[in-house]
Length: 364
Figure 1: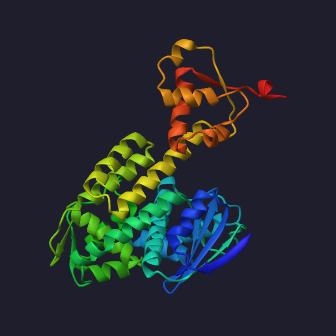
Figure 2: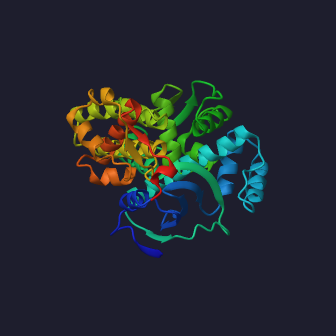
Figure 3: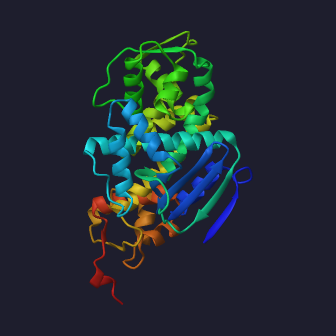
């Protein structure tokens, strides 16, 4: 199935959310005045990104930041396209390529969301031939959350760093733990003492929003100084959301949920907080399904002692377990939210109240 449309009538965040919820596989092409972009999806996960001259932009930026030899990166990316093999580069260089490709993609999605225009074309054919693509690993829901966060924070970043003529000076040296785009900024700024924000952006050849955002983050962390910048005001919401996103990537969903609860109490109207909550829930559900697949059939055990410690809602769900229904059927039959039902099923399994049914027992 293929379809296309106008992003003015079908906004990009809604389109990405639909593709994520439907766990789609295929290719999404986005076109707007800022350029073209393709996302290749596999079951709702972004597995590759492509755009015209992508290899050249990444290679140039990595070379300017003294991370890799640009020609070698270009050649390796071109060779890897034929058999979908990883680029023949040192592992740390591949990590830098993929990390920069993800940041560049998030910057493009944020720019397109802000533009509120353009067109899209979706096809279930994931053919990458003819495109300059780079393999990445990024959940679509994470891309949605991060790009919306970029959009929401952009007005404040521009207020504090309004002019391309402001001078950027590094205050620290990058380490192996430094994020790729931050490392590029620090290296270029160190090589050209007194470089302006505009020249820094042109030297790297990346989107203005991506570079300025990286500089702002380094400035906030006191890793660069900026002549003539506006007053730096702390954004506690942004800091907490960034910590929450790290917890989600580490699958510490309960801790991320506590951050959401605290943010909701402080400002329930903040769109970033609502999107963060949706992202946490979707990631948590996906993680629970990985441990307990939807087609897994559960049966009750005879452990009466374990059942005595259950709450009433947990007993109700345990009563639905009949040795014939799989997890997806139990989720549909439950009167609780999908996440709550899955968490309860995991608890019942952990306590020994229910157990997986082996294939021979499901026959007939």
